[in-house]
Length: 261
Image (cartoon, rainbow, N blue to C red; front, top):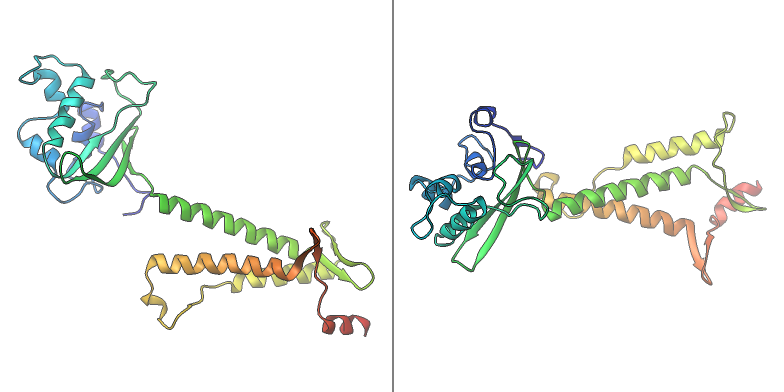
């Protein structure tokens, strides 16, 4: 499922509301597409009539009712630790929020884990319940891919914009023209060539496998690598560092001959 998808059950919200006492029950809704298909420890406790709200109302053997919300959450987390398998944990509230406030909060964080024993836990996912809507937290890899893609796109656009403003004359060398002029045919020529380059920028296959044989991660890596390489090649052909100063590279001798003619 896409990371931008969400789930809302208006019937549950209208009937029971949403609080830290029942947010796990809300997440375990049968129609929630984010919940795992495997039988979780939360469902095992639920079949025994154990949840945070019940612990608050009935207490435990050692702690008579009624219990505060924070104490009930601790007892529920302790019950989960005695079980193994996939579990959903309700993470503590922010430091500035009252841990015993039963009133509805705008944000809840739920962690999906695979517990092997009381000390070994593997995190499988993180979910947010924001104003009654359940969202999946993006992975670190997904966030990095999005940031790199935005950065590469912005750098590519900047290089295309600069390439349309660069001019070279035998007497003055490279100059920059940033002001648009209607009668400047060279500007139009450079702009059209840059647009053509953008339209022709396609994904190339770096090995002998057909396009459909690549995984999504490999194709994303190919596109990102080619985008970065094209920017570096473009910059290397335009500038060189001499004695700590950046200088423009003059065109080849063929271009000079054409200029003289």
